[in-house]
Length: 274
Image 1 (tube, rainbow, N blue to C red):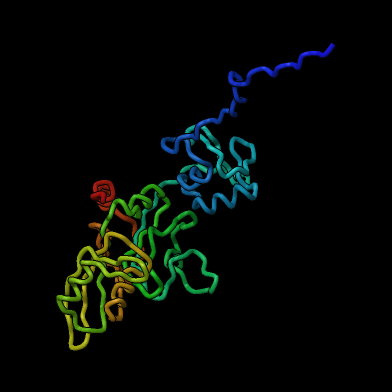
Image 2 (spheres, rainbow, N blue to C red):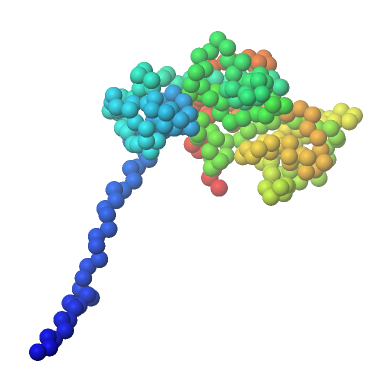
């Protein structure tokens, strides 16, 4: 006697296996931050440097070594240490330098060239970083701080805190040149534009301009002028927002006043978004 073939059970009601439950990503605001950001916010080092220290096993949280660069911690409760030494929030430091020509804006230069940190001798600059850059041939106002939040607000392209430069060029300027700078010039796939460009004075063969930028692309002013077949002879940053270089001697450093700091904070918070 033949057995009837067994019918397979219908599959339409079968439920697919449950997907693993993933915890939502931790928020990036408030006191809960990633470990590299925590070390940066405390003024110990940059985030990139923090990641290297963490991977090398030099960072501990509440006495336990952490090698995960994406670990989250609570700044209010976590005790951080690097090589066994506790990391605590430092008092914020805000300095301005009148950068001389010929210095590179870096802490250590692989070519052995003098750097802007050579001007900070006598200041504890272990955890200080420059706010933005001036290239080797440029001069003028450069800020240093261990307050990463303050620095990021000034550098954020969305805030458009203006930077003002006095620029000596190798020709006599005319209105068409100034108009071209403020309208924008395409160079190497980028639009290079000045927020404002005016003539300060001129001699027989060259001119001094005042150029204001609200963004800072690499070699922005030099490349913009090169596109107009103009050579830059000197480039001096004279102001960031309302903070002016003033009569600070070349190579000299001083602390910012509370009024100056408040002014920069207001400008970086209130600058128009685009």
